[in-house]
Image (cartoon, rainbow, N blue to C red; front, side, top):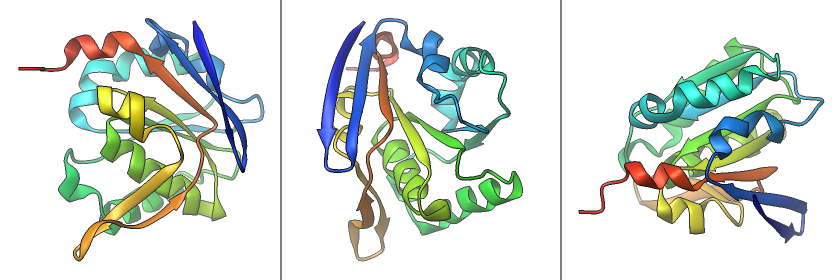
Length: 175
């Protein structure tokens, strides 16, 4: 496995890169975690959800999932409200961990929700597109769109780790 340490003003986190990282997601979960919530979309969930959930089941923790619609048009406060509603219904507390499994839209919206829910809970990036693996999952850029512009509402909030499985790139359409 390749490990890159990222130093940010809020602390240090790791980017873990290998060809089977999805199968080892459980190793990224901190010991004091009380629950895990995977946030993804239908396409990514169908491709990788079973593997991710199986790996995370090794923690023995309660596991939940939120499937949000795919596409930039859903990166808005209405979707964030749906995430908050679900987290509150499941009583996810400050020691819960959100997992953003998808491309840049999923990463941005999950990071924004994590940075503002209960004034900030931990989250992990699991980027599944080339751009999200090399750009949007790193640096703590989170946000949602407003009708007056893209990424107009957001925060800088670092993940606790970025878990990159390079084999997910095999399912991308580069045509």
